[in-house]
Length: 221
Image (cartoon, rainbow, N blue to C red):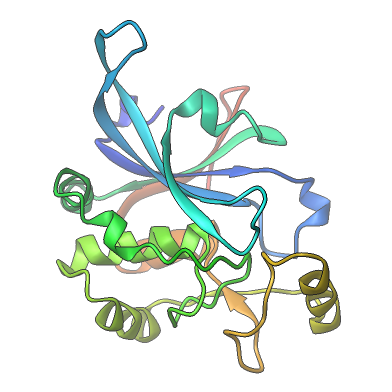
């Protein structure tokens, strides 16, 4: 689908849990950036396709993340449902994102201190979708200065409220190092696929945002 839209770069999301288990207003649990690339196969041959650039939570140290490049079959291997959130950026933003990876600058924005509900407006913690927002804004503003990027995000980006009681979130943090509220004030808000899509639509950074199902059904986001 992305290729049919001529996308050289796009944002992709998947859902790894029952939608009933997610807080209201949140549909996807993982977001990444896909770049049309030359991919070396196991037999040494080269093929064209989408490489997906992810921030993944460590499976053992849940308060830590790593940057990992994988491919569509890997990306959806752990998905609960075969549906994808897709944002096709504008042509100019696609070019800027491609250059971020050609110049190997995206890794400069990685913060390995992970939290599922990381605050979008500071650098204490980071989740996969906040990392996607940071890379997007670095491409748009042509800077990897994280303080400037956070100031710009605070001025223009509206995060998603996490509609779950603070008591539940605090309890979750007891059992998982991947959940902490230490980077939040009174409100708990984070970056999600939906808030990213709305931000890009508002400022004409995207051509379209859709939910693509395995049946081929496409719904405008």
